[in-house]
Amino acid sequence: MEKRWTKQLLLLAAVLLPFWALAQHRVTGVVTGDGEPLIGVNILVKGSSVGTITELDGSYVLEVPSPNDTLSFSYIGYQTRLVPIAGRTQVDLEMAAASELLEEVVVIGYGVQRKEDLTGSVAVVSSESIEKIPTTSLGQSLQGRVAGLQVTPSSGAPGDDAVFRVRGTGTFGDASPLFVVDGMIVNDISFINPQDVASVSVLKDASATAIYGARGANGVIIVTTKKGSADRPGQVNVSMYTASQQVIRKIEMTNAAEYAMLANELSINEGRSAIYADPESFGEGTDW
Image (tube, rainbow, N blue to C red; front, side, top):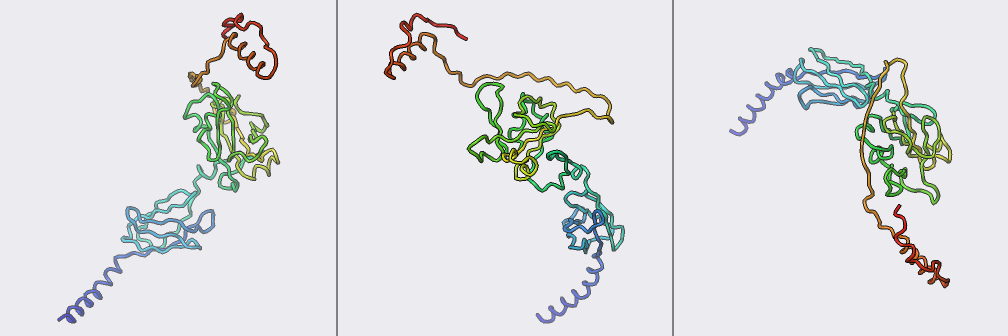
């Protein structure tokens, strides 16, 4: 009895197999970019999990449920394309580069370079990113924006200059990076209005020394400011920002009499005579 059921099931499977095979639609093709085959392009049937990737020569083979499905082609740096199969068995595609990604340029040394051609460790902060948070200094605008860039206040005084460190401190001497503003080397960038900045490039590895020599050993921060454009109409942007800063903990100072007493104690402890004969005569002094 069991053998008879097994034979019947095998016979049924043999009958249904050709119909299942006919239900599948095989699509082949080659995907290229700039005339060269693209390896690893993701190809998915829209609205399903059926998909594949291209081989070394850019070719692919995909069994799709229906000849009327649509294929989605996606690849890093290229525009995603939706291509209807329309009953075809071969679908070739020339993918177009995503211009907003590949045409982005980065200021490197004395020129610019496309972002896709970069080999060194470079981080870029755009003006749009800087303008999102209003700040009083460019140093505050860069805090937490670039990996490996540490920006700390040099003191607790409001409006004081910031201290920049690229990938930590690697020398016993001055560890400050090199600052370049529109091609000119400057000592610091605290004088720059954040609203006037077009982009900030941070060179973090040995590529900086290849351009600027030993001066770039601690990294380079390149600031490009905004400029007028001949092909654009005149435009004026106005932004107003009001803020206040205060010292978190203000240390109480001594008055004139107290200072004179402390100065006398210090002098006597060092084996010398007192400096002031009558410290109390100074009174409160002047509170600056």
